[in-house]
Structure formats: C-alpha cells, structure tokens
Image (cartoon, rainbow, N blue to C red; front, top):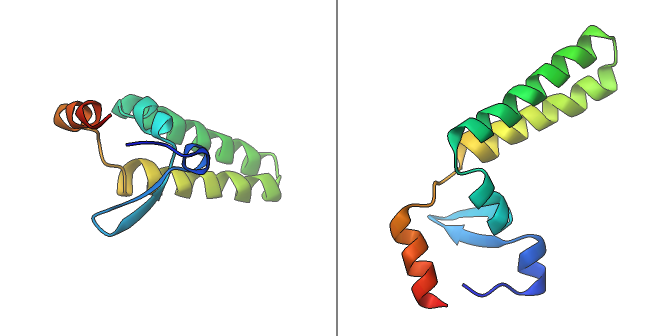
Length: 92
C-alpha cells in the first residue's frame, strides 16, 4: 500500500463498506486494547472534572472526545492480524 501525501495526513480506505479516517501509524499504536481503554478512561475522567468544576463548554468538548473514542476504538476498530502485516510487506 503506497501512501500519497494526502493519504499520509488522513489515510482513507474502504473496508467492508466503511470509510475510516485514521493514519496507519495511529492504527499500529492503538492495536493493544489497554491503550484504547486508557485513552477513553482519560477522556471520561477529564469530562467528569470539567462538569464538576462547572465548565460546561469543556465538559461538552470532552464528551465529544468520549464518543469519538468509543466510535473509533471500539465500534469500528479492526485489529491488524499478523497475516495482514505479511501481505502488506509482500505488496511493497
């Protein structure tokens, strides 16, 4: 898979009729489940802090991050299997 300058910024591909917006390096970084959970928990704690300190604007921003984390890391996330890594290396 060759990356053009635009696809490096926002790699987009269609996989099982879904369009994904995530760089390939991000997908590799978030492969371990604990990292995805840690980022989501951090956003939840940030949201609780903002709502507890009566900052509704930042509370809503952090809620948006929570929904984004859920959507990208748990709902539509597809793990890279070892077979997929070998196929990508053979294509290049």
